[in-house]
Amino acid sequence: MKQKIKRKQNNSARCIVCGDQNKASLGCRFYELENGEIAATFRSEDWHQSYPGRMHGGMAAGVLDELIGRAAAQGSDDFWGVTVELHMKYKKPIPTEADLKAVARVTKKNRKLFEGTGEILLPDGTVAVEAWGKYMILPLSKISDGGFAEEEWYQIEEDDPKEIDL
Ligand SMILES: CCCCCCCCCCCCCC(=O)SCCNC(=O)CCNC(=O)[C@H](O)C(C)(C)COP(=O)(O)OP(=O)(O)OC[C@H]1O[C@@H](n2cnc3c(N)ncnc32)[C@H](O)[C@@H]1OP(=O)(O)O
Image (cartoon, rainbow, N blue to C red):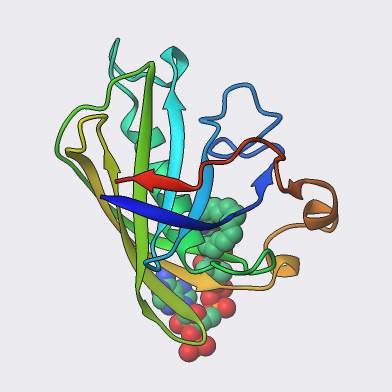
């Protein structure tokens, strides 16, 4: 089903999932959707493999870890936290050298913690991987030394889609 995109979130420079200046990165883009969910688009490259032709399960975990975390950051470029628990269910292999999508949402949130779920979809829309995660909300100063938000956290100016088919 097509979902309208409300806002694209920032990318970072060096992250393995969304790093715009990291050649090994999955190059994720994150789109906040009108229905309250968040979607990611990314490309699995040959160097993201575990077995030949199959994306590494750790890379899939990385995508869903970050995407579920970002589901709670919707509408803000200054919301931070860390993963405290992540549970994965690998249902189908994810091919390398494929353009892929993922979607996530927050299922529970209080002042200190939040939880959410997410899925990676194969090009035909089948759910390949499911995840559930729990996160602790923290100020950036408790996670990383100064300079990240100012120097390495920015919008990528490009021709963004207006909607996404999930
Ligand atoms: C995620 C949002 C992202 C948005 C932007 C996206 C871009 C960025 C990319 C994002 C990339 C994706 C993200 C990544 O990849 S983040 C990278 C992977 N995750 C980490 O590195 C986290 C490592 N762990 C820690 O740093 C510490 O254990 C933390 C800081 C979490 C707690 O520290 P500490 O252990 O010293 O705790 P405390 O003694 O101060 O206790 C404080 C309170 O917290 C309660 N507690 C403790 N542990 C848990 C737990 N597991 N479940 C529930 N509650 C817990 C505790 O009972 C206490 O409660 P109270 O007694 O006060 O009531």
